[in-house]
Image 1 (cartoon, rainbow, N blue to C red):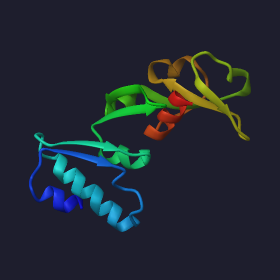
Image 2: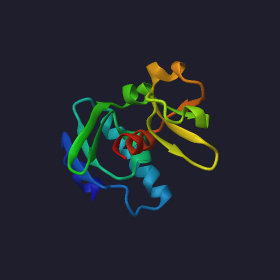
Image 3: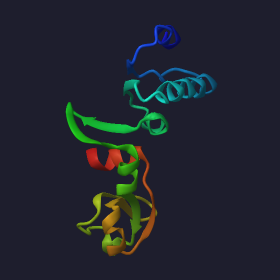
Length: 138
């Protein structure tokens, strides 16, 4: 269906869950097709998906919507640079710099603004779009 839509050379596509129910090989091919379409700066895709990992491969800008409300609208690269995941000791689990911390069998981890990451002791790693979404919308 997408190939048919692209055959008329539209400048805007509205795609709702285009990657659902597609086998992994076809999914990768479709992602490449979408990326090729987006190489033309005159083209726009508005893509709705619950597959946040796939959005991370495609999107230039991200809008998080939770319960019908826009939680965030940001350039994807800036968003990924703005947050980290930090794992802290139990003593720091209530630190006000952590965004919605979660305790698991290993300890406590949470989202933190990159600018605050050096202010708390812990193990820091990059945050994925999915992790950012879960912590901001939980």
